[in-house]
Length: 226
Image (cartoon, rainbow, N blue to C red):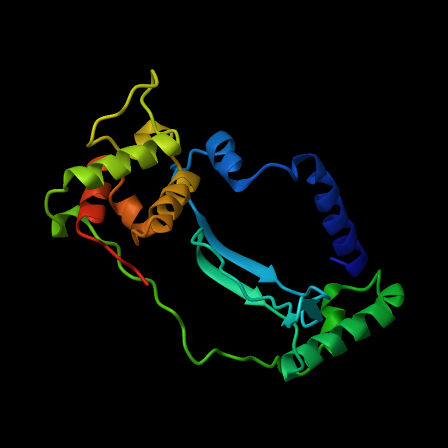
């Protein structure tokens, strides 16, 4: 394959996807696959390169700086955030990009292998010193019977995210949310709802305990995650 053919393939792929750019991951899982409704993204790569990052702004009598830091949510197993910097990696990327851009007009008919000469040399790699691990989910087997207050909170949460039976009636305590039309987004909403009210129940806990009974037990025992 030549570089020109690769450019055309990327352009054709991008053009073909324009009518479907509004379709979210939840809709794809529900309408285009036979995947289970709790399917989540395996990995996400975010390139954070906003030109306003680092700028200083004045809010009243306080000077503030815009940063790219923030919470990423709990919707994927592996999340990578790439940000610009002045390290050796950034310099290597800059050199390679400059070489490709200055030579692209002469290389359209050349095979892709010819680009190896433009990006020669080892790729600098930086490995973070620490990697955050994910807590293991808490299962019903480790919990006791829930109290009435916890059961009432869960019932309200399920009502808020519209988890109901086929005819709109309230479902039983041992019915899985995935049997009521729930999916990964529903799990995310439930986790946020519980956490907003001071109950540290993670998405992993909800997936492992998808019934009202299981979640009532989690709340009753005060499951808290950092």
